[in-house]
Length: 382
Image (cartoon, rainbow, N blue to C red; front, side, top):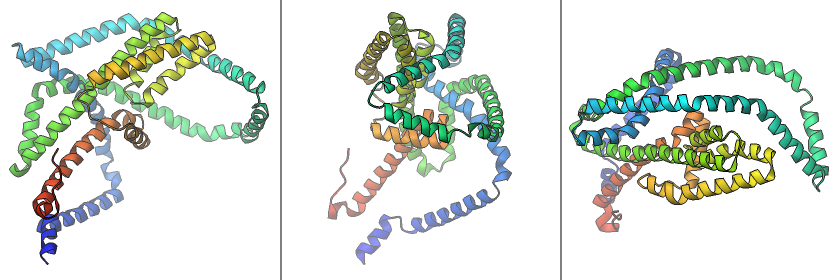
């Protein structure tokens, strides 16, 4: 009876009953929401408009807030520091765009025109190699299978036209959202940099005093983990893009700056990003010559060696430690649920969830030690 009573106290006592009632009420609310979801469509539209610039502003906040704090420590007022940084970065970005935009534009146009021919040349070379190897019989079987199954492809095109039109509409809507986000996020960033700490304190004051300390600790842990991850990933991406651009120039690979920008952008996605980035470079190098493909392999091996042994260990030192298998699972799940946005934000989202989970588990261990530790042994404290 004593153990039973202690277990009831361990799992919350009367608080457990209130918790179960809240869960039931939450389930009922979710069920009702699912039935009248159309009522909330305007709210969803508002959120889909507001969330992208807020996310961009938070990413920029984590990058720029340390610089603003540094300027504040050297007796430059916070507002002037924010204005100096925003104007300086705007000028730098404008200068870079004006400097490299013509080269990137011509390379992108040329690459878009020639890339289908690159694929065709690669496919022809692959076909010639297969037909002269022991895989020739299997190639013929595969070709006949494709011919049989894709013979009615023209009749299926009409079925996809409606979906294509919707897709074009979706792209137009996405472009509009991107433009709105780019225009509005600097204003959100300004007020985040100016009043970010006050906003956090204001939110904490909305909570009951009993929970403010726990909430403040969770928010601080999130700030450290997510902030260091975002800062580290962007700095690593810039380093990779710069190193690859230099390497591509040295070996004389075509479209060097475009391929380097693609690599820098995609490298923010762990593990999958480098695979996406190197694919067009491999195709272009393979069509150019086997020697160019070998040079490309040397450049990529050198950059990956520098990134894995020097850049990431020093820049990402404070970042949340995540097992590679966990990263792959998170990326696949987040990408399937939320698309490209999920792939980009999946790891920071996982970091936030992990911080909350670790904190809750720490509370669980402390509670277990309180009720059962003396009799059955204590959880170890890290």
